Image 1 (tube, rainbow, N blue to C red):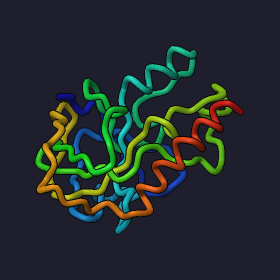
Image 2: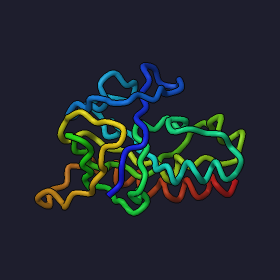
Image 3: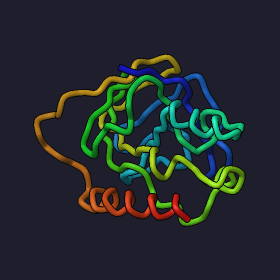
Image 4: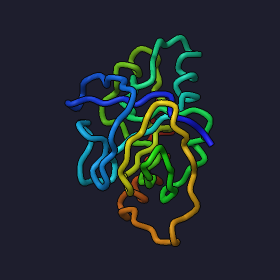
Length: 172
């Protein structure tokens, strides 16, 4: 079991996220008021504090939310999660829909450090059950919900392709 160490939101895409003490997750939408919310498979993004620490060890001064993640966790190995896994956070339930992402344009962190962990270690989810979440809430992996998958097929294909693309990007 892990915990939430930060919740970050922004009203516009491409702007720095602001850390907030709590947020309302809306089923099939995402975080209320966040620019990335909507009816798609990447409603909420998560990144482990342990991943952020990797960048700090390289001398990059970054805080939770700097990678545009909505939820920063600690103590749960997000890298061991798989598409289709479910996470309970506060009163909400998330379904993991994508692992990592392809970065079409390098971010400011990449230019400062020569690397960015989000393409490899960030995960994306959709909100299955809405609810309030707070900094300090437990993050718990739930058993499979009835064996039914509701992840779009394209997200799974994107996950497999993403891994190779992210590995190539890291070597560049």
